[in-house]
Amino acid sequence: MAMDQATKAQLAEFLENAELEAREVVKITDEHPDLTLTEAYEINDLIRDRKLARGTKQVGYKMGLTSKAKMDQMGVNRPGFGYLFDYFAIPDGGEIKTAELIHPKVEPEIAVVLKTALKGPGCTIADVFAAIDFILPAMEVIDSRYENFRFDLVSVIADNSSSSRFVTGGQSATVDQVDMKTMGVVMEINGEVVALGAGAAVIGHPANAVAMLANSLAEKGEEVPAGSFIMTGALTAAHAVKPGDSVTVSYQGLGSISARVV
Ligand code: 0L1
Ligand code: MG
Image 1 (cartoon, rainbow, N blue to C red):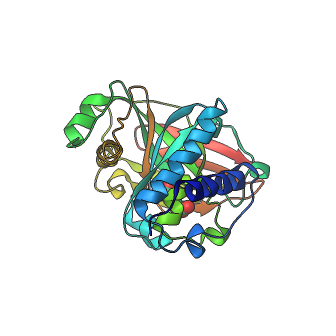
Image 2 (cartoon, rainbow, N blue to C red; image 1 turned 90 degrees about the vertical axis):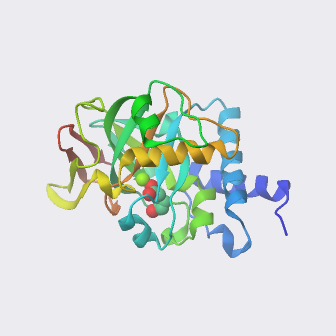
């Protein structure tokens, strides 16, 4: 039976409170095993509505579960998207504050900022290249609200794809200056290399993830607005961090970004 609006609103409140209070909860499909992907996105939209109503600003989007490494790590079989809000942003060299989080993990990503809106259906990688203003290095801090990162695809989509913080800044480049597909990335924690990857890990090319975002949003009549910051998905598996850690991600042709975990 389809989930009613009141239950969706209740689940949105439950998951958003877990995020705001940095409190882990059981995955929502334990109680609602028939939750569909469409309903999961509707719950996440209600979380967005709650934030926007309080004056929080949406600054962009994230694509998640875009690499084989991530899908294998989390036991799911397709990508999804989530929303990024103003208070998620951490400047390059800034602090990841564990007191505000449950069990943060970091993952290296390639981000883009759009100069023009992208609208599906039928958005292609060529449309994405034409719309990109510049490319930025980014580190996503994911923090599933679910106990022990135990979830399934629909539970994680309803939980804003585990979005919590992101670090970006440093050097930018245009699409002519770097090759996002072959761009190599090295992630170090406390000086030790913990992960290596390349742009192609993101469904063949990070720009494909942006096209997928535009086409997914089109299903509910939305576009990706000009000026959006989009994290295209992890290039490697995610790594847990703890207070005292120092994380650096170095990009081929795009400098590096870092953060301290406190
Ligand atoms: O790849 C991602 O950014 C999605 C994160 C959702 C799964 C997780 O929490 O690891
Ligand atoms: Mg990610």
